[in-house]
Image (cartoon, rainbow, N blue to C red; front, side, top):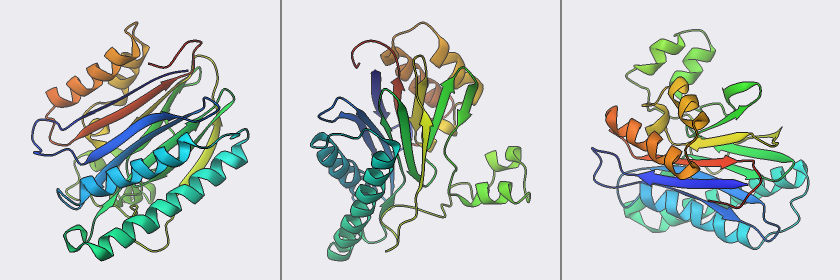
Length: 248
């Protein structure tokens, strides 16, 4: 398994409110996370960092995530725990009132990948069937697309594009989507915040992921392209490639 994580504050924002990383548990399985914080500096960055920090700590001490059921249960329980931590922190720290974060997290083993998401940070898969988005955006515009009120093209430039219907740390009851897919030799997962997906087309993503560069350079190229196309938002991504070899 090879993996890389990169984050960049972009060309406009003063602070990076995204967080994430790729972490290894006791069995060598990977957890990749991208979290896009909201609520302004000293709130959005707190929410995303706290989320990633908790999941990293719990993942690095875990083992025997051998089935899809155990992976799904782990993500459900730990993301729910994060939600409670964020709500409590906001209640006790007035400067963090209203903070929250998106999250997309993928557990990858040598047999399957289990993906959980809340908000509009995404996970894509590139495999022999092609390239597709696995996660569903929990956003107003996506709901309008799903219900046929606007087209996918309209959604790209909709004035309320940033309105989320779900986020982590904003409601007592947290709802997340969790799904498991087969993950096998040659497959690639791309997790990213909307700072990437709003600025780099799916065709461009595929082209970069399929080139012969090392994973690190592919990640850097994706970030450079998002910045070239405006870079108005923080840009964060994780790539996990199922291939024989070490991480990195």
